[in-house]
Length: 215
Ligand SMILES: [Zn+2]
Image (cartoon, rainbow, N blue to C red; front, side, top):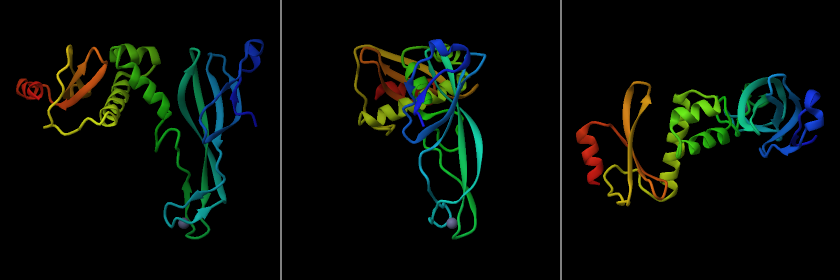
């Protein structure tokens, strides 16, 4: 089975092969839709799964259900993944369960790498712009940005501790954003020169921002 993207039918003369680069998934089929979307049918490469109830390793497939997910666009073409999610039957405790989705996460409709890419774009572009360019809602783009920013802060060894002092950059960027539309405003501080998030802090009221700046 080829583990690559290919466009079919209409554009076969312009088709190209690109690796899917999702090691846990294998390609079952792929289609070029009339609207320019590349639809790739995939399923997990594993042949077994651990029962979440009794940890018994199961190989008996109960059924398979297609789930539509969105992946990163390819040369401007939207990529739609049809994940054939298998349900296993545990012969030990007699229950059925759906296999985990490592590429997207529990009940997510997008791949983790798409969410990360959207979040990273929001470092240098306004959320509304990123949302329009990637064809997602601004709230979703915001959520992607917050996830990436929080991971970044932790990876850089910076603390999520609200009391810890912060570095003083040459050029400080400050903005507010809503965690939910119209609710729960937070403040973000950036080092504009280093293009780094310094902190994401709850609240945007004057006293909250003053406390943040004092750090
Ligand atoms: Zn079981």
